Amino acid sequence: MREYLLTLCITAAVTYLLTGPVRKFAIVAGAMPEIRARDVHREPTPRLGGIAMFFGLCAGLLVADHLKNLNEVFAKSNEPRALLSGAALIWLIGVLDDKFEIDALIKLGGQMIAAGVMVMQGLTILWLPVPGVGTVSLTQWQGTLLTVALVVITINAVNFVDGLDGLAAGMVCIAAAAFFMYAYRIWYGYGLEAAAPATLFAAVLMGMCLGFLPHNMHPARIFMGDSGSMLIGLVLAAGAISVTGQVDPDAMNLFSGSERATVHQTVPVYIPLLLPLTIIAVPVADFFLAIVRRTWRGQSPFAADRGHLHHRLLDIGHSHSRAVMIMYFWAALISFGALAYSVNSASMWIVLGIMALSAVGLVLLLLPRFTPRAPRWAESFVPPRYRRGRRAGAAAVADGAVDESLEPARGEPIAGEPPRTPVAAGVSAAHGSTALGARTRPERREAESSR
Image (cartoon, rainbow, N blue to C red):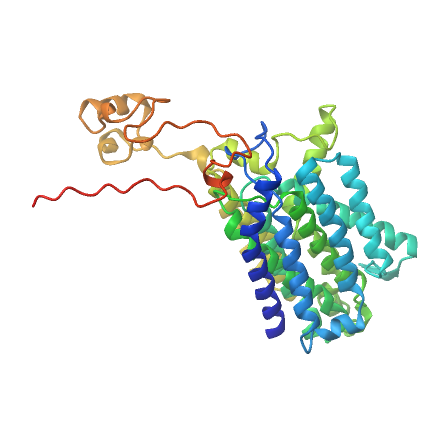
């Protein structure tokens, strides 16, 4: 566990330290597209954050290769090299898309090729545990097609959910944490060395996301772009493929005792079929809903729109940060709920706890629909947003609670501050996320002394 944590920390540190220089490089390279109608941000923001994440991945795998215990993963399995080869290819395609915006079909072909590269090097699904049937061995073509399909679906699901600051990195980090606990339990609890690569992939993925999140939280100074979203989607899919298709369920020696006991004991065997889907349940649901929505309108499934789940949360009335936190909550509930059920499927308390938390999540989701309003007699004691109608605001102005003369009209400059002008992408004098240097700060006014 110490070596896994060391690998995680090294990956996070390298990703965090490289994100700043990568941001400046993205600005100089012009990887700052104009704001589109479906975008939420208001300033041109550099992309290419996936460059830092890829080098964090390389650093994590390099450190793990030189550690005493994790070195056995590289000695006994070719999966880390297969992951690195597929990640390098998908990362290169993402960098080109962030800069030149290549066609969607070309990206889809690149994703399939990256998955094929991993299959050629041994990272593929060899068998599947099917409830009621047992372990089913797959032919080479069946394993290849299933592996490619899982990689492509996961990559696009993560790419689709990357629409708000910190959303994709945070959700994938939560999913990777749940998957790390599950894979580590299979490796350490049952003594199956075949689960060690998946555990390593989950630790590295957590480090990539944790190192990038401080730069990507709202307001984001850099986006991961397709070079980052497709990369973390591929790493997540690689871990799921490794633990699902490489770990032999018969090696757990679970098929003993009564029929009822066997059903409860074999839950960890069947969970690999469900856990990779539950940890990305929200992105996958958004992915399929987008396909149905666009096809129903007669559009291409790859045509961008503003109908994703995070866009709907903003339309309901949630703020940017609250929408992200709600998506975090549901991702954690589904992934860790499935993890808890895999540990003890016979406990009714786990099911009741998941149901109770789901009810809390629904209340938080619909909270803007039920904005509380104070009664008439208490309107003078609450903020204006909780008062009824415009009459309360007008009464507050008449009573002197709000002095409209102190507030500038919309669109007029504030006294003492320079006028704000729109900034185009690539301008060297831009501020905020478009600046090469530090953000400008208003001058401090010295307080007048009575002496």
